[in-house]
Image (cartoon, rainbow over all chains, first blue to last red; front, top):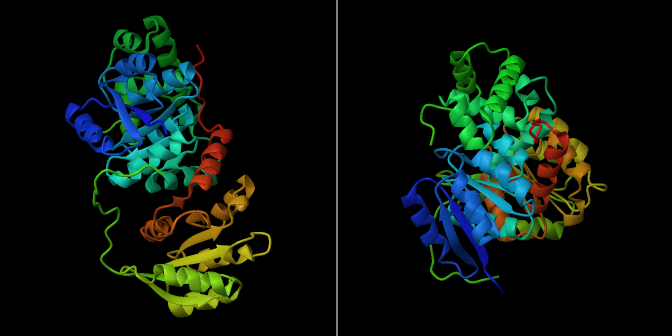
Length: 216
Length: 168
């Protein structure tokens, strides 16, 4: 039986080394590469063709949310498993909506991670229990009139980057789009949310858990 | 299943106090079977066994379990409508449903979640999965087996709560 080829994406080299060491202890899992941010991840997927990508959320430059969306557009069959300490509802739902097929928190036991990798590789989905709670609650509560729901994926990404202090030019470079297009998304996002300046965007993002002071 | 090269010990959930479990099933064999499976788990105590019908309501009041393991081999033939009043009456009770894999259909899983169920485990899952599920729901989280997770995530995406495509 061929092993599951895994790509690790996390900006902390020591964490990658630890996870790599752990995964390589299993006969059916092989770590084929590592990446430190979203851009490197996209390049590594093209070069290494992994079966499963273990993706962190918050990384410098292109984050895991943007990288996941790009990768799912380029490789819809790719199995992306989020591995992060970030468990806020809005981020979780956005990532799963984008196409990630599993979500594991870094606080999980090693056995949970192995179980998740095997599950997504076999075509199933995996949600770590606290994440399952978030998704089921969202499912049960149904559609809401929350204006955040009305943002497009790109507008949501721009919201996060603006709140993190990035300029239009910097966001354009990360997303590989023009600064003018970023400005269009930014304007639409602020109009939809009724926000008038960057300070309000930051306050809103913190309030909704899209960014936080101890962001990983 | 591929082997593991070295043993790694880790504790998923640390619970100091035992978890009291009530087993509800219309099958005596299933009731006794689940009790036997949980017997060597120090942190789990089976406090009662009962038929999966309206007698569950009384048993919950008398046994005061933390977790109700409700076996519904066939959702059609099991009175799952008792779960809703049970949830209203016992908001702190964790309800874990076990059932036949073919019962994991979109409508059935969603229906159970709407009735206040905290978790679903297929009969094809392992004993370790069942034990993990009991511990998970006892801590207030949701536990879904693979099949149920697939259904829930698919349904969530179909709800289209978040637009996924850029407009430009």
